[in-house]
Amino acid sequence: MPESRSRAKKKVVYKPPPGKKAARPSPGWWAPAMVTLMIAGLAYVVWTYVGNTGGPIRSLGQWNLGIGLGAILLGFAMTMRWR
Image 1 (spheres, helix red, strand yellow):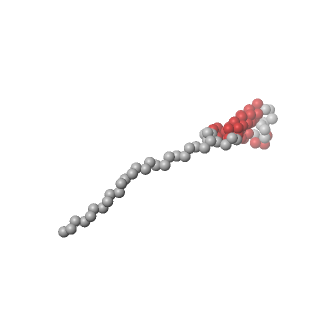
Image 2: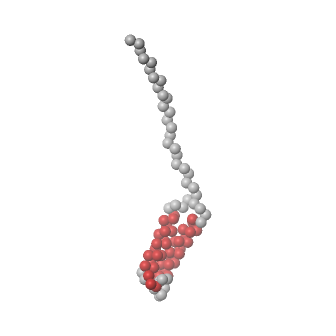
Image 3: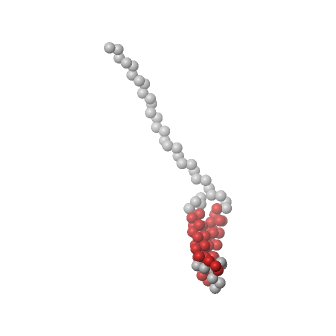
């Protein structure tokens, strides 16, 4: 019986996975906005506590603290994306 031809084996070449793209730097306005939010939030909280007027927006009452702390939190959250 005749012998069949063997198949040619493909050469296996290792291809490393594509690398991650380099992180782009933050826009120029990012750091000033981040610092401004943190300082403005701090000033808002201090004004709420120290001022005898009941806070910058009287009708909100203690929710003024939430606004100030939210601004501070947003500023700190922006630090995670800063490059």
